[in-house]
Length: 400
Ligand code: NAD
Image (cartoon, rainbow, N blue to C red; front, side, top):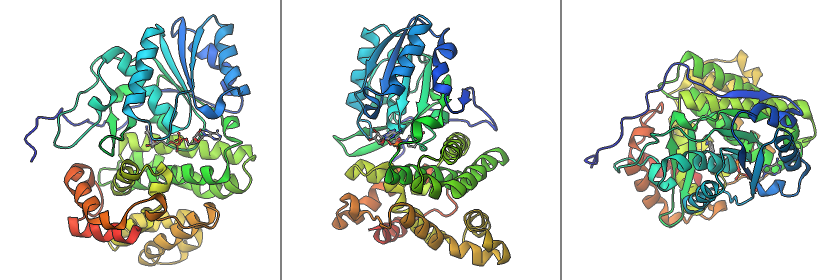
């Protein structure tokens, strides 16, 4: 099956992170100062949520103040599609922009990252997505400078080497992986996050937790990636309920923004595993929101994994429920799936989401398991317990 020559896999260093990160409330106002040397014209991609907003005006005014011309686009759809990304890259090229700024959720940042490298490297975004058993292109020419301004917490895309691309024609969502995708600059300003509605706060927060959880439990995790992941989970556990229930709390929002950033940095060093594989495939098949696609499977994957991973699961359980410090590892680890279920239900407004919530047809569960099994062997091999096709089918049945 593996007869197609593929590029050499990424070799991850112990620490590799070239991005300048500026953090703090009101930091957005300084975007002109930070980018003044990047060129004469900026391609400004804004999440449609910011159309006509004061925050978009802050960016444009700050750039104009230092003599940078701007071209604005608001063409962003959730689960970014390769065809839409290619059109944006063409526009950026035609507009002769010198650098790219993306301000928005993870989808917006991922489009911006792809635009920045497509302008210099050509082809379609889809050609660069990593597909097991199929040839794919790699980025060989440095991208335009890319500036990430995250407005959800989140994907951590401002600190990752990934851009996730959807191809609705074949119902697949795949990832571009390259160190060239690290932004040149990330501006993390919690003020941008004060109006995120509760359900979106929960869904994006679940993504942050999933990143940190999966990075921490990846077989190849290192002391550095584990430190980032553990701190991300701690910040998530201490702040997510406050962010959902009192979104205007700037301190809690700031802590979740850091959790998201650290989670992104963690997966750049020790990547996501089984839950993200299932979640990403679900989004490809039924266009489920990213956080929701993870909420449906995280606890089920852990239940199936046990008793493997007992030490790691116990450590994670104790971060969310410190009272478990008093019990054995086995007891703490066994408690983790229910703790996660309960927390997710609470932050999602007392609703439990399943694959069916997002339109998954239960009759396709077998086909879905087969699809994952045949296309994600390498990524699955990083997880604490590697499922057979039958075991994958059983996990998916539990998620329905
Ligand atoms: P998103 O970007 O799809 O945004 C979700 C919604 O939030 C949109 O309707 C948007 O308009 C709105 N929104 C954004 N900021 C807001 C704000 N401040 N206030 C109110 N509403 C706001 O969702 P997301 O969860 O941020 O990103 C998910 C995408 O990121 C998926 O495509 C996923 O595959 C990708 N992803 C990428 C990485 C990476 O490393 N590159 C990692 C994880 C996920």
